[in-house]
Amino acid sequence: MGSVVELNLTRVEGHGSVKVYREGSRVERVELCLTDSPRLFEALLVGKSYLEVPEIVCRICSLCSTVHKVTALLAVENAFGVEVSGATALTRELIMQGGMIQDHALHLYCLLLPDLLGVPGVTGLAQKAPELLKAGLSIKRVGNMIQETVGGRLIHSVNIRLGGLGQRVGKKELLRLRHELESVLPACRDAYRLFRTPFPFPELPSPNALAVDPCGAGRSAAIRCRMGGGESFAVSGYREAIKESVLPHSNAKYSKVMGKEATVGALARLSLGVRLRAQAQGVFDEVKHEILGRDIRGNSLAQAIELCDAAERAIELIDRLVEEGQGPPDDVGPVLRAGRGSAACEAPRGLLIHSYGFDSNGICTEADVVTPTALNQGAMARDLLALARGMEGEETKKMTTALERLIRCYDPCISCAVHVLKL
Image (cartoon, rainbow, N blue to C red; front, side, top):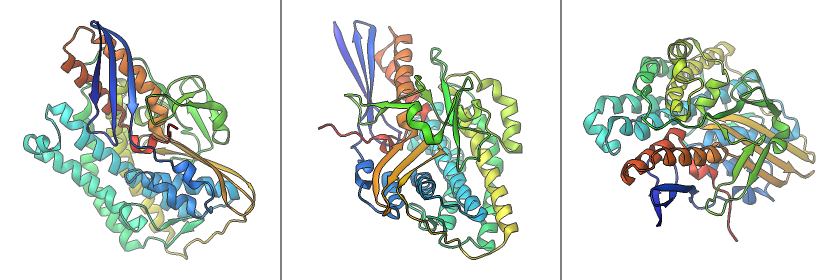
């Protein structure tokens, strides 16, 4: 007799569910339903000025606002041939590293750690392991400070602008951030110890890693994207490599990259050899046998390593900005022309692509945003099916708990991913 088990996802960004269709104890199929209300940002941007595009599109998500704004700025600047100064590029990367610290600390300590300690959520974590929760929140607080100091406010930065900055961050503020980063760096370095034990799932399919080319221009901009196995494609030609389709049960587009269900995020980046700073590299050398070649359960450990790397890289960037000294803010205005610009960045959750077309007056004629969670949707569904089938015959509660933990390993941001509207 057929039956359907529906699991509503908790402790993830946004709303979604998983439906398991069974015939007796046999699992027939699994549906991943990303059901947050459609954001419709791609349609909203059409008809807007190039100046409005980055300011509007960063409202797609409060948690991922900074990386959406920087990626949108890079795409608009690509369309009009704008080159920013070294100070602007460094400042943008600094705020992106702050976003990495914010997001990884939130996910690891508030959303994932309760699973590892067997408590229902943050409230249970506060009772069972208050010092661990305080440590995670202290790390996240430093990420917040970077957003406020560099971006001008916690969410939806006003200081990161087209062609430059509103104003350069002063030496006193930079050194204050450096002091705060140094204070949490030991906790960032040791975070990996909490996330080394993978959930005891049946073995899952190996991921097809996708990230910006680690040999490219760094995490704040990229020329190419690369997959495991050596395949790559130019960011400007991403439409040839990434094919999207609409699913009847999800408000996010389903993506295949060069014919494969790709996996993006921390695990993919480390698998593809992204450069790490000294302390993060030391941790990676110790545990890489627990990451390389492993399934998505290795993503949490990879995020913990990136947490350390982001803090180290932020300190490096501050040192370079202090060394450069103060100067006038950039003010590089674009020369308007009809055309298209695309950009790819590494968001905390993985590869993010923005692409915009403009007419000769700088009015947006088309917009396309490819988010990490949309890219991961196919791999998540594939792994859910493999896990459900691997647990056939188990108690339903045990299976649904495992499925929910699997989704949290991907750290999805459903709010960013939903663009489809059924008419």
